[in-house]
Amino acid sequence: MFKVELEIEADIATVKMFGNAAELESGIMREVRKALDNNARNVLIDMSGVYFIDSHAVQTIADTIRYAHKRDGKIFLTDIQPSTMRIITLNQKSGILPKFNTKREAIRELGFQRIEEYAPQKMRILALENFTSISKELSRLFKELRLWYTYKLKATAIGPEAHELVKEFQPSVILLDATIGTEDGIKFVHWLKSDYLYWYIPILVVSTEGMIKKALHFIENGADDVIIYPFKHGELNSRLQFAIQMYNIVKRVKEREIEADEAQHI
Image (cartoon, rainbow, N blue to C red; front, side, top):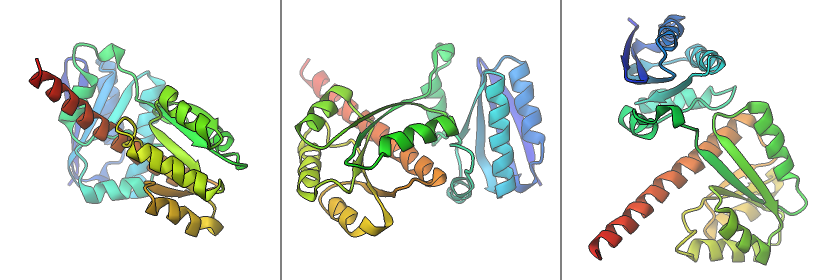
């Protein structure tokens, strides 16, 4: 048995789903339409009561999000069960479905008082590339996918200028081309991961199928993950979303530690 409930509080609507989401059919679209008709521009889809979802239901949710965007609304999935999350991740064929871990986190991020000022998180991507057109391919895919977050992309070769660009650009994630010189690449990884200001910035090593061994050498020296080039849409979405989520979590923890330290010295 599947059912949907709608609650509207201030400028945020919550659509709560219960049961087997494989049976959702058009119920979610109807409730989201009601929310938007009542001037709730931000809709949280609370999935805490969902115990199963299939690929058809994931596509229905994606279609609902696109419908909301056409009406200048935004939708966020919240409180997703781990098994449901896995199916959603595996079936994201048309861009990222925006997610928060909990409804409380979503409301805190959106805020009731300044809801109209909300903007998606900007991802700043720094590509350190050799001869591979990583940044050109990223730019093409981002425009094609119309991802829910905004992005700013910069590219440079490895070397001293890369250190300066990290300091100036403050990237959310770094893509490191595995075809660059091993010594230069590892020196850069060691520099970043040993610096108190930048160690939490994730480094994704971009590798072709034939260079996995070299890419793993970067991982052994402190890089965070490997992504295969040319990029696959679903993989690129998942890896970059995970990278920025981890970046934001660690950054918040770091900022709280600094605030607590400053409070002790007041």
